[in-house]
Length: 630
Image 1: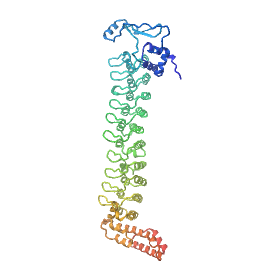
Image 2: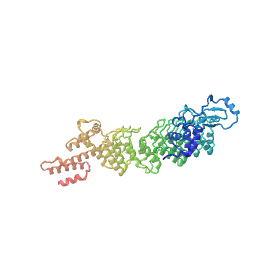
Image 3: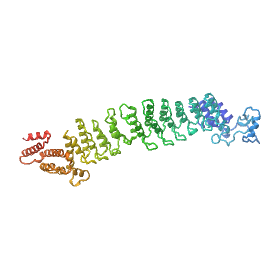
Image 4: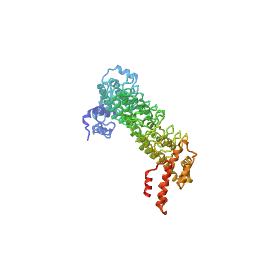
């Protein structure tokens, strides 16, 4: 749509042709006064149409038959001096500038300064609207002892009408006082939205560096003026500009002494506008670091304000892994101030923050103030609590590094098995699938299976959970023969603590061990295999013989490596497992033999009789099989 230039014709002519203002200044004034925006090229084209184009006689020739006026010769313009100033001050003050026009062409010929009685030539071809310095009075308007112009004072005095008058009169808007502040800096400090909008309309530099290297946005944040912050952001202000100390507006907003919704609004506005929460100042602190340092847990609105700040930063991409200057991680600082509350179902804000931390890459094994990994602390102290949000357990297990160990050598699997319960199965599965070593020993030499038997009381429900845990550990290659620093293995602990409560667990471990030995090549005993064979040599031999009689002799031989307090129960459990092995093989043992059924019946009966003699109770299906053969 074509622009309507005619309403502005006289004003543009006055500014550009009569007052000889640079085109850039004319464009700025038209934009500020009338919201009229056009390109430099459009302005020059229109000026040419009107016949006001400067220094372009070829493009705009004078009318035919009219001669140019003779130039004024012999007049020299001297720079302003003290002497000339004194002379001029003694003359009557009339109009400071009287334009003279050529009656033939209507073009500006010369300026005559009535006050100084000096003749001033019109600008010649050696001037340019944009590339040369502006006239002295435009670039350096009158300043007082502090370097402030009339516009500075009008802004500081909150005189919006005077500000508007000065701007419409063409006063320079981007001019600094002796503290390096522009009028826009003072408008932002004074929290005067109307003045700020006026200055911005007249192309005030919204990124200008002022006192302490601060931008108008820094000033607006310090003044907690939401409308001005919004106006500067909408105008295009750099939201992450740093002052002389490296602080961004976001640094100042977070450190603001008042904890109000207004300050919280400033922080959110800056973050929404793209303010970078990861820029470090000269002290090495980012705005997010400051938000964490200022967070103080309490039961009042101050805590809510601090929590909302932390959450806002994380939601807008602040780094959860960029350390403080002393190397401490952000999550460590947060945990030091609220070590337990994030795990409770009732603490929604804390759980949201922790979720954001983990989503942003923070490790579940981030050390707490004590040095203990967070996930380890959770399972050791919090997981058993009734108020705990159990979903955290699965999340921590799924994200944890499987090879990470705490200062005591415990893996996360050790900690999970400290308190086994109904929810433990999924956690154990998750950790084992992720690659946690079921045979990893802590500094006391204990494997995760050792941890299962550190308790002193075992209810039927607890025993069921332990059995499920052992089944999963064995499926991933857990070795019950590994001994801790005291020489105790998990198998011994089972015999000591739970064999009198249930025969299932001892047999479960020995059956698993039997399967491992049957699938092992005798000539390749290395590592774990050697540990198994050395744990009980007689048992190792008994698992390889062809007849139960030989196995019984080996099992009930005086053992050389088993503690006396578990010797008897170990022998009974081992013989039971071997007896079941031979009973299971009875079907195949007598295939193709004469009187096959009779031989099989006699064989099964002898094993059952021998087990009864040793007070061993076998599962009922074996007795049912014998009855079927009779």
